Length: 280
Image 1 (tube, one colour):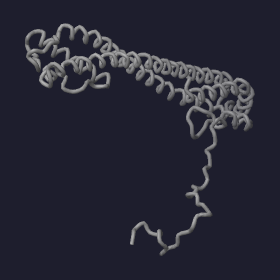
Image 2 (cartoon, rainbow, N blue to C red):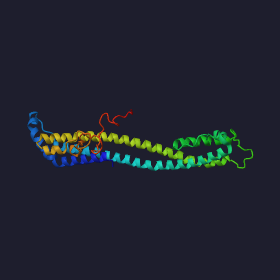
Image 3 (tube, helix red, strand yellow):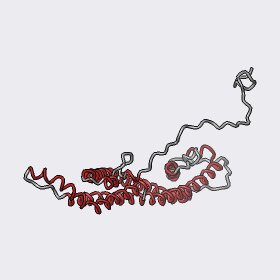
Image 4 (cartoon, rainbow, N blue to C red):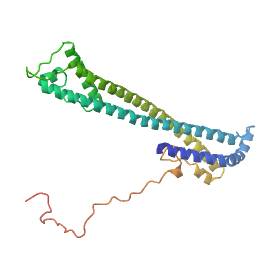
């Protein structure tokens, strides 16, 4: 679980525990104080103890939802590692094949042959550019296979034979796994983005409910004459979703220190050699 969510879960739990323990006492005192005014209208004070209980349930439910969505984000990030490893492994295997093929073509057919097979440039290292590179090479090889393009050896008596069919059979099986891995990476990226958006929404709701729940109980405790209880549930004014007493105080860094000076170093006075960056 991320620290961002851990801190919020801890603060929510603290408010829940305080309201559970002191809610009846605070509700009774505030009800007693408000009763005369409610009587003037011929009514009664609402059941504050039940209101506190319902607010606690709302707050803890929103926090639990945030914890769950945070866990989903963590799981999606872990999944990304596996699919990216598969992608990189597939890219490494394909690049090795394309480099080997390019070296052979360059030896037998020179720059003209490399141009015919879309291999003028060295195979790219990145998975996506490499996939596009290999696809172009396969397309060019199939054109030669269909006699839509020709390869002319540098030497008329070239003893080695180049098989287009074998080249295609060697390259194609290594392209398919990379294409599948790239699709998996894209899918995982989309799922992670969706999970992050859900978490962000849950985070905002949690912080809003926490702030208002803690603030309302703080005010009721203060009105009822329980300042120490009020202090326990006071929300932070700096960090959303956490309590004031769980927010570290800002560190006073003090004055900015100047550069250290070695007292044993000779002082350079104006007019002395070395006192100016410019030479005479």
